[in-house]
Image (cartoon, rainbow, N blue to C red; front, top):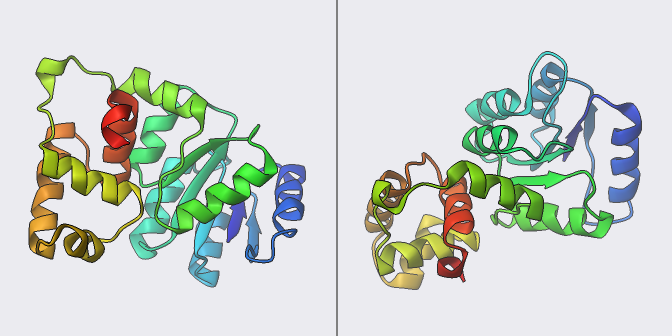
Length: 207
């Protein structure tokens, strides 16, 4: 993974902690957005651990740049900012997970593993902030059907379209159609945002 944070001591602390885990490897460190984009392009990491606010580009801008040429790179935002105005743009830009810097070291390592497995990880404070930002009157959004909920739950567990299709005994094209409907109903553009919205608005439906 690549670590991007404009504070050297923070980068060194995170790297030192992650080096204790044999399955986690840091291949580069960046102190600003441009460096982060360049390092991802040069090293093709599996994951980018990204600060939200840095010189020259913020987290959402870096996420969009990186995903434009490395769409399979997972992105974890690690920040001190937990307001709804900070969280939603990061998720909509393509960040897979959003954590605060007071996260326990072991929990951070687990969150990185979960993100690499395709799951979305949101800090409890982030979930509260997303709830405030995403809350809509019920009349403004259609509910998901039982099958659409099944598809979204499997996506939240990290399944690909092919895996979802096999699990539900339907075709991949049908899965894509379900996602199109889900995105329209939830007023989002991607899986991560859809999962985050349902976790915020209807957490019981995602159990």
